Structure formats: C-alpha cells, structure tokens
Length: 304
Image (cartoon, rainbow, N blue to C red):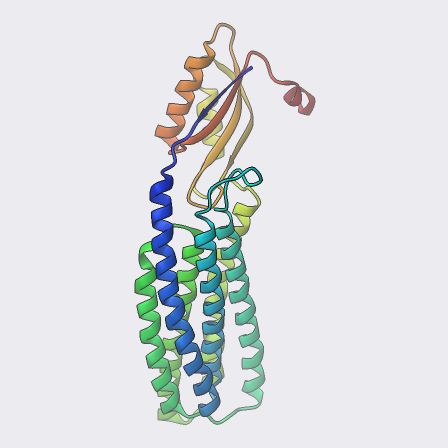
C-alpha cells in the first residue's frame, strides 16, 4: 500500500491578489458608507420606500463589504497546526453570510412594500431622483473597483453582486421617480421596491447555494466525478477505483484523493505518476493524493 501526493500552489501570487482585493473592498466600503447615510436621510425627507429599500441594500452592502474585506485578509494567513488548510475557507463563510443578508433584506422589503400598497404614502419624486442618481454613480464606481477580482473567489463575487444589486436598485428608483413625477401615481414607489427585491432574491440564493455546496465538501461545479472515475479505472494496470473524493477549499481550487487497486505486476510508482499527469492534463486538477493497493483495502471490503 503506497501513496503519492502532488500539488502546485503559488502562495506568493495568491497573497498579492488577496492584498489587491482588500484594497478594492476598502475603497468600495468607504464609498458605500458615505452614500448609505445620504440615502437614509433622503428616504426620510422624501418619504420614499424605494429609496429606503435601496438604503437597506446599501446597509447590507456595507456589512457585507466589511466582512468580505476582513475575510480577504484572514484568508492570507498561513496554515498552522490547528488549521492545516489555512484560513482560505473563511471567504466562503463570508460569502454565505453576505448572501443570507441579501435574502433577509429582500424579504423585509417585500413585506414593507405590500404594506405600503394598501396604505399609500406621498413621496417627493425629484428628491428621490437626485439621490438615486448619485447612488448609481457610487455603485458604478464600486463595480469598477471590484470588477478585477470578481472571478477570483466567492467572497469577491458576493461583494460584487451586492454592489451590482444596488446599481440595479438605483436604476429602478430613478425610473420610479420619473414615473411618479409624470403621473403622480405614488403606488409606483412600493412596486419598484418589490421589483428590486424579486430581482435580487434568485441571485442571492444562487450565491448562498454555491457557498453551501463548498462548505458541504461537494464536488466542485464543472467537475465530472464519473468521468474522472472512468478515466482512472481505464488506466493500464488499474483494476479498481474506490474512496474517490473531490472537493474545493475556497471555490477557486480542486483537490482529489482516491484509492487505486492495481492489477498483478503493475508498477506502483509509474502508475501513480501516469494518473497524476492524466488528472492535470484532462481535468486541470493539481492537488492530488493517490493510494495504490494490490487488493482493496479493508474499509472498501467492509462497505461492499
């Protein structure tokens, strides 16, 4: 019974990217907090639920961005004796929390919007328009700052989604303010708020689903475990594959472990090397641990 382990991590590049992400998050957080105060004051002055709903998103943005920034910095800490994978999964926890905040905020807005549909409140459309327009500018700047890192991790994706949702919210408030000014239909305000909430919910749920999938050690999206099993089983000298596991630590990596049962006379070292190269070339998996056996191990026989 023998093992082979292969990995290739560029921790220097990873830490540099995380540093850049932290700076981008800090800039966006400062912009968000500044405009959050303006929207809260504006929603009170102009009696606009649509503005308040956008302010609620801004509040969740501020909390989410603060958490994302903290997570991005914590993720650069080196592994230790208690956390052998380091702290990279903290970013996934942050993404799950941020998605939960968005779902909660959208639910509250839906409830408050329905209440206002039955109890209309007069709003000031020009004030709504001015604040929402300024908010859109802030959101677009934030999206620009975060855009480079949105594919880097779920944490950055969550932060980008928060700001993107607010940009759409600002556009909705601008449209609603224009319609109210032209028609004097105050019911447009809660309807716009409902539309924003319904737009945000499925995207937030998708992020929550992705982060939960990683926390549950699920097979990474886009990785075909059946194809991997068949390719390993089809290697010359392999008579069986079991205890095959594939997971991700933080969403931007893939790890794999497996037990390979070898045919009589097969060379353990050579076959493990062949399997590792195949996994790198065919599936882009670079963190691999393989155990080769002349017969199935006791655990596999017990489970059979």
